[in-house]
Image (cartoon, rainbow, N blue to C red; front, side, top):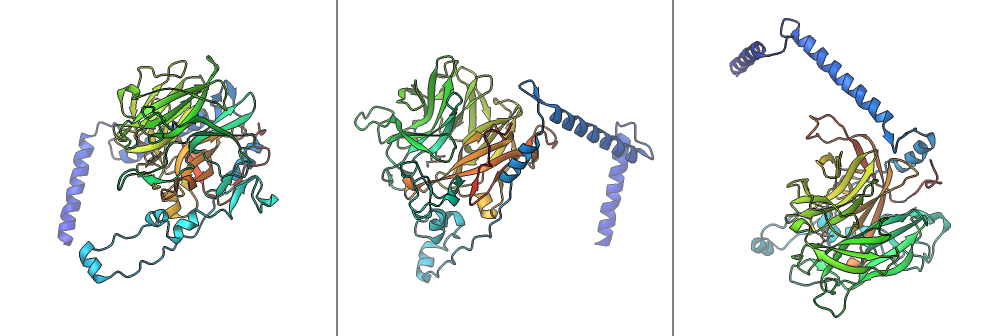
Length: 483
Ligand code: GAL
């Protein structure tokens, strides 16, 4: 064995020598290794220096960014890391040996299957009942819970009813300083249209809620209603309307909603467009289409600072994403399209921007079941996009691997605290979809990304995206006015 090693080592020495001879570098003399590494480190140091220098002096809207101590102190509040003990899964009960013979060994019960099984303890842990509600009209509300987000608990609107705005997004109306939250109203019975088909609720419509503080939400009603009788209409109740997103078009003065439109079997795979003169609707449904002639399922809109808006959607049976700009009136698509995150099988895109860089959070494709989120970054919305790692921080391993048992839907900037956002996600409850919960958590852009980079030879050009787990949290005092 020792001989074998020494042979191998001799071989290596020989190879090294040969490689040295062939090397094109001029440092290839006796001190060459030392000089080469010094040169390399000098390069790395110089690149890092230039990188940090440009990072610090980068201008936003032509103004220099000043790191204000107030930003730091409020941002720290959002970045606290809250750890949770690992879950103890209930031990699997013994099975009848005859059943084992007939059906083979049972698949190990994972935390996710327990979470989805409505009879399990884990399920009730993640879907606490009405005695633990959050919102203005909480029966036994105490002032100590006012203003706090409790991810996963029932969230009541100002009338005391659970908020119905799933797969949603928020539009901020700067003129009235009002936030509008649009989402799927799923307040109907959950059923399976086919044996082993996806759990579903008939279309009720797109709900809208308004708020000035992001915590107390007034129900503005259903702004785009499903159709009870017209069986040929896209909004006919047995079809699918998911992930509505609204943006404002300053040229036409119209509020424009795009959404995923599908039939009950998810074969239509289209996007729908609706418009309104008011953020609170009613929206008029215009049409559906297959964007760029491709199938489209989970989707989102992103409106850039220059007013150009983009549609981003899962395509080719969720294998890739497609991205393309909307026409100027936001009612259609230009012919331009790029295929991004190719063969990565992602869905639930949520796009946001920080200091000129675009970021996106996506989920894997596992229907209503939660999975691990991924953050991506790009210098242009049109890509190329790079993976920069799982953004989930804190909690425990299982929480981080399941995006805190939820799936993203939107990322809302908190302009008063640069680099801080709210990550909005849905904790789907496929046994009773109307009872799906909201998981809102602070999201922060900062620090170095931790995934190997594809296009930058491992050099981290992007900042890290972190979503911090909290059982209970609130926006820092004065979060709107910190400048
Ligand atoms: C998810 C998707 C949801 C919904 C669900 C149906 O993957 O993100 O919006 O379509 O599948 O199973």
